[in-house]
Image (spheres, rainbow, N blue to C red):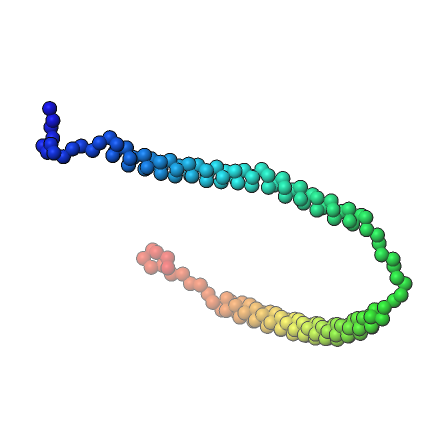
Length: 172
């Protein structure tokens, strides 16, 4: 018994359906294999970077260092010449002239500094002398004011008498 309404339309055959599916599966399989190959190459490169490259770098540096040390130890010192060159005295005379100029500048600066310090010292001494004179005069003025105040207070206290009166039995 058939459940189809349109019997003239036939179902696709097994051969038609098989032709489409394997191509898609084959393409997916190729993509997966390419991805695995790429991942494997990446892992191999990272393993080379982690394990092989440091060893190569250290070995290369050690070999270069050993070669430099060997060439340094194996080299001979050049013979010392006894002739003098003419540029050394000219340089020495220029250096001596420059040193003399710097020394003269420093001496002038020190002389100016000494005169400045002497001026400051004399100003400080005159200021302290003036301050001492002002302090002495202020002390004398205070002493005379205190003496005058004590004399006027003594005279006022002798002239003043205290009187008490009672009003209604309450002292005021």
